Length: 126
Length: 288
Image (cartoon, rainbow over all chains, first blue to last red; front, top):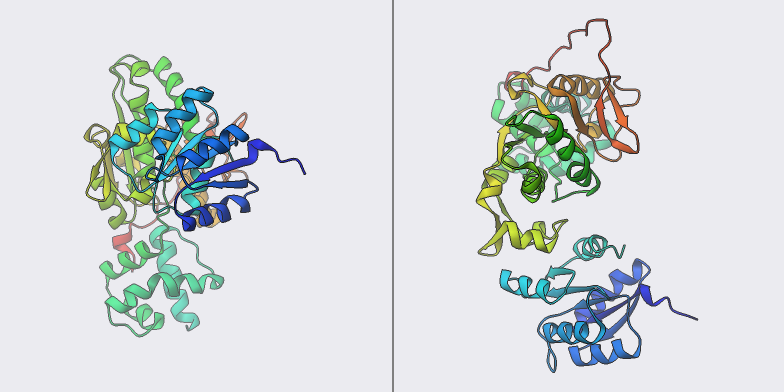
């Protein structure tokens, strides 16, 4: 079966629990979810097949979320795919860094279904 | 609950706030009034009804407040805010004389997100508006949410509902685990305790009225009364914004929806016949 890549969300988080929760919420809304547990593996996944969007943790081993975002934008250009941070970081300077480096939205953990889907709606993915 | 007890509570709510509660909503009374029963050491809703038949204005207020819905979020249902940004503000600015102040009313302000969203839109359009003053008034019948609105302090959960991250960074600062609205935004908005079904005239005339997801809780005569009263407070070329599921059809002929915008209404042209006087609801404090 061919997967519509625009409907694929790459969930990047070193917490298996967070990946599972995000998967459950997103799959219920018709998205296909792929997972990566750090920035480096996420970048490899993007090189293999670009997802329609990325839900991205900040603090991860090997390559953190911000470094992944910088590498993604440098390699593939600005804007696409949309990247939504989803992190325990919640300082204004972190959010500003995310904006500067090309993130589309910023979710502060803990999140729930309403917040996650609301942010996807805000960036035009729903 | 006895029919008499239910009738007492339903009548109080209808007179006090226009809320229409049928017997199918008994569960809502039980859930929302449970904290009041505990606080006043009352065994059940019948005991509360008996207490309310005496003179208990503060208790009446607490009951009305507990039963009103305070659901709110920033830029809720984005569409009306987009209309203000792209249509209403540019038009009003172009047609009003220089120096004339624009007035916007958030008629069920709750904890303030709608009023502050409007203030943020004004701030974002400062280049268009130049030095034109814009006053935003938020009113609500419930005292506790209004106190929170005035404080301008929102939880992390609340600022993530509807607020784009760029606006969060621009118009809020962190305050402990919460987020505080910028003073420049807060200063554009005033909040007043007001019953939508009371005398609205002291509030003055508004160019835009936001009254969304309020009429759905009223029965038809109460909706008609509220719409009539709001029509009187709206500038002749002003606009009324209702919730997406609300309509004036079959309720009032004072408003007509704008083409293509089901939830945005302008006033219908005045007819030659004088308008009939509409009885005002008694203010809450006078309800017995």
